[in-house]
Image 1 (cartoon, rainbow, N blue to C red):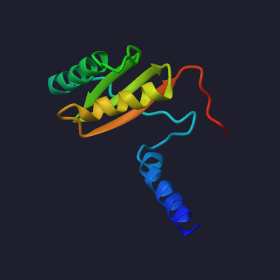
Image 2 (image 1 turned 90 degrees about the vertical axis):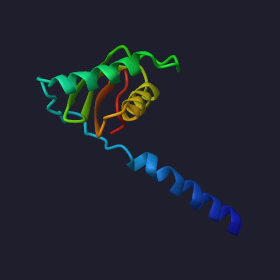
Image 3 (image 1 turned 180 degrees about the vertical axis):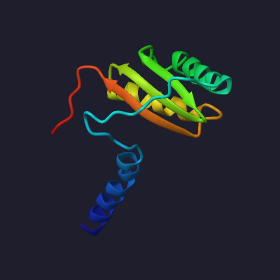
Length: 114
């Protein structure tokens, strides 16, 4: 019985980084996405966009828009699943030069439980 309780505690603690690792936003909250990119920002956006479109996991990320500003990558647009949204965020973080990722992606036909 003691081992089961320890296992349950370990399992619960192991998912905490996933729960709190990404900030969530309330419905209706907006993020101001930059409208002008420097040449360096444009290059970073292109790198992220190219990686998103070449994803080998067969996740459709064609609806993702990418804008960069000073190492911060802003992802917006629509994806078809929560997995696609997580994959887009993961890919963006893997691109060299990315210092932070702001996720404004929306999942089509998904509504949060209130």
